[in-house]
Amino acid sequence: MLTLDNLSFNRGERAIFSNLGITFGSGLVCLRGENGSGKTSLLEIIAGILAPHHGIVSFDDNVQSLTYVPHHPCLKADLTVLENISFWARLSQNEILIPTAITYFSLEDYADFECHKLSAGLKKRVDLCRLIVENTKIWLLDEPLVNLDSVNQQRLRNLIATRADQGGLIIATTHTDDFIKGAMIIEMGDFSS
Image (spheres, rainbow, N blue to C red):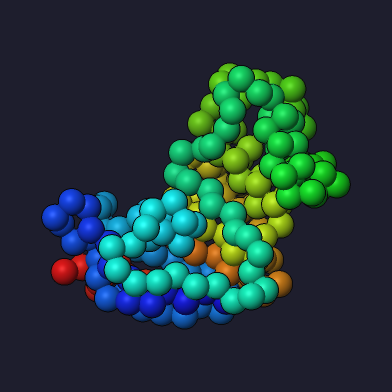
């Protein structure tokens, strides 16, 4: 589904990681490492936001798109919860999934709130609704549990497990050892120069 072929990435003169090569099928992959080890940079390279210094990212033909949920929510602050979710759903032509996303993350009481009025945890839940309405095969998640209470952490874990069982690929950065049992772990320090 996804191949990383001999990837290297530098920030200025400093090599962040090098010679990273792996092919992923489906399931959950957790990127672990110290701050500055390249976890977020690797997600952004896969998403096409950054270019690697060296190497190639390639996808199978059946991968049409992916969803990248960064560490800080990507919301239009002056739009409501419903307007933000509706925007992503329209882009993906999945407007029928809007109610499912809102219900899944228990956002019914906040649908008409402008996003700048929400707590950090609520903003995170709104941003995670993209996973449902965009309905892509590959999810790139940067510290997805941050700012979520235990109930919503479990909801996200369940959503990830379901996507993996359906043949999806989830690549997430984490600092915890127990993100989801059975995940493939990639230690970014193994690829530092």
